Length: 101
Image 1 (cartoon, rainbow, N blue to C red):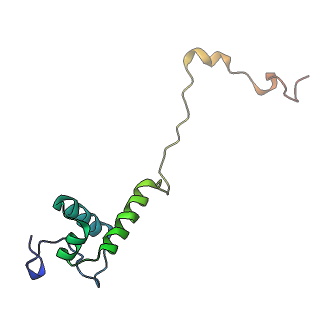
Image 2 (image 1 turned 60 degrees about the horizontal axis):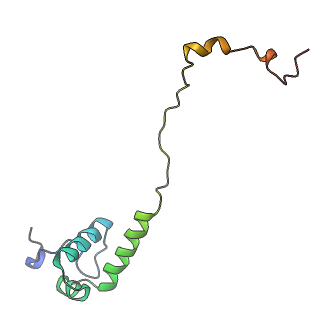
Image 3 (image 1 turned 180 degrees about the horizontal axis):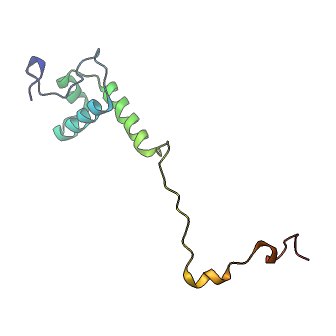
């Protein structure tokens, strides 16, 4: 898909445009597929080598870091097998219970 100036480069060209992680990933993939040295690729695509390197480091760190947040879970009481039902005792009969006489 052609972009402005007839380039097929990923979006996010130029110093003034803000990159997203998706744009950075596309550039890193395009660089890897090109087999060009980093300096050659970045010069050809109009981005700075330091920008691509910064994003590479950032995305590697994110990939290694555990995700933080909350996961929705549903707590379910375990079912008591039928052969264990007769093992249930009232609290008074448990060893160490203060109410025992």
